[in-house]
Amino acid sequence: MRPNNRLETDHPARFWKQDNERILCLLCPRRCSLAEGQRGFCFVRQNIDGKMALTTYGRSSGFCIDPIEKKPLHHFFPGTSILSFGTAGCNLGCKFCQNWDISKSKEFDRLTEEASPKQIARRAQELNCKSVAFTYNDPVIFAEYAIDVAYACRELGIHPVAKTAGYITDLARPEFFECMDAANVDLKSFNTEFYKKVTLATLQPVLDTLLYLKEHTSIWFEITNLVIPNENDSDEEFHAMTEWIKKYLGSDIPIHFTAFHPDFKMLDHPRTPVETLRRARAIALKKGLRYVYTGNIHDRQGDSTYCHQCGKMLIERDWYQLGEYHLKNKNQCAFCGTVCPGLFDEKPGNWGPKRQPVSMHVN
Image (cartoon, rainbow, N blue to C red; front, side, top):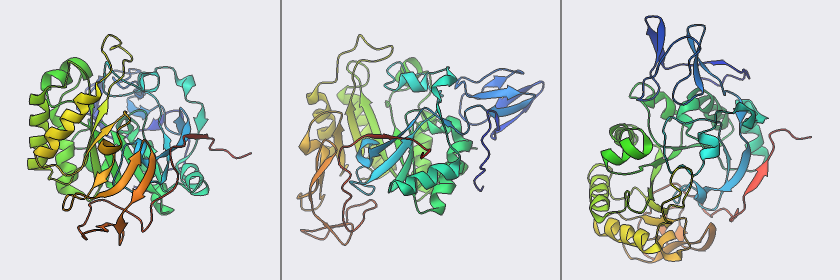
């Protein structure tokens, strides 16, 4: 579908059907059944006059330029800048949420910035951003807005990027991802009980999303696993997760094991030890995954990219700052010529570690 430029408080939503005197949401696996006036679990989709409405269309909690590595995406135009924004609400209930003030927000007065899809695309172009990210809260719940923004961005040669938990139905998945050029999918655990207890969701739809991206799209995607002490940090889980990734997604899908810090409803849990992330990385490499990273810690070795053939460093990262860069012909190892999977320019970007809040409206 083409971009819709209207800014509305209650934007007509898709992915629902009539259910007697209620309406049934078909966007995410929760399938919320809503009576008149009721909101879904995500809080932003509401039954208004017997039809589904997206109540956050055109409104954001703010815009910021980030390094692409912060999403994290390590094989998608390294060093470039990405215009990032989110709205409010979420369709998961993660007790550890590190953006809880946005994703758990039911206060729409947090949505202080209004912008149409074309305004966002034009602003990204003016700011020389290579990409636009739907992030901070999950873009699945504001799918109509994200889709319209994505198409507007593509018209200007800007890459749409989804940072998502992948909790979406078979019905909505194709339309949502059709307009994305890259995604980072949070695989929060490889344990069904963890998903049920800690995220108030289920694992299988997330695995289905990963399989869909691999088998039915050309989207570049990477995986993030936030490692929480005493919850999803066992060797057994790392073995099972990485075996599944290797078997069903292949050796070239990058995975980021990232550190947890106490937040939201899990303030009683300690920070993730550096040794745990390095252990997870070692297990994944031993399983045959070629591009395994550690995140949210200062670990130059674990954050840098190496050629899987000759072992030489291809892209050095020190936090979000790039150092040595040894790719030729965009994606070949400068030492042995082996292709490094991903999307690269002839030269890396030079945005660095800056985080720059911006307004959509220029005075």
